[in-house]
Length: 180
Image (cartoon, rainbow, N blue to C red; front, side, top):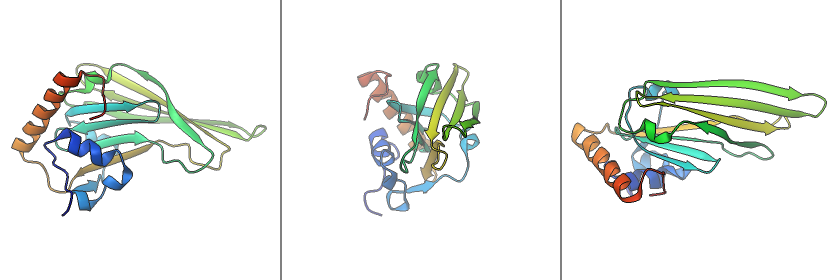
């Protein structure tokens, strides 16, 4: 394998998942088989919010989640609101990971809307993320949940190294999710 991800290094993981081409076997990532509920019990070690376009979470076992929208043409899908503090997700197991949707539209205007709500909860707090997708009804208004996981499961030692790297990163840059 060339250019394989170092799963004990946040920058190595984040550098690959910021671009959809990073989610492949060449880099040691497999597309996650489970949905959002497959993240329950995992420990988040990093988060990044890219404006209203995306949220990335990296977990201690090397699993990564990127919530975004794969643009097709004439639709708009973005984060409308985020209640809670993403830092509440750090260093404690995820207890709840839920998705709910609500669709509406008008035949008169030809406008369609899809509201997608995500709830992520740990013992420290709860995060509610509200996305709004709008289009003429032809294009997808959905949020994409790109989940990648290491091709080879991380050892306990590697997971501890990733947690330590994330704490060092937080000490140096704060908890505002700056780009690595």
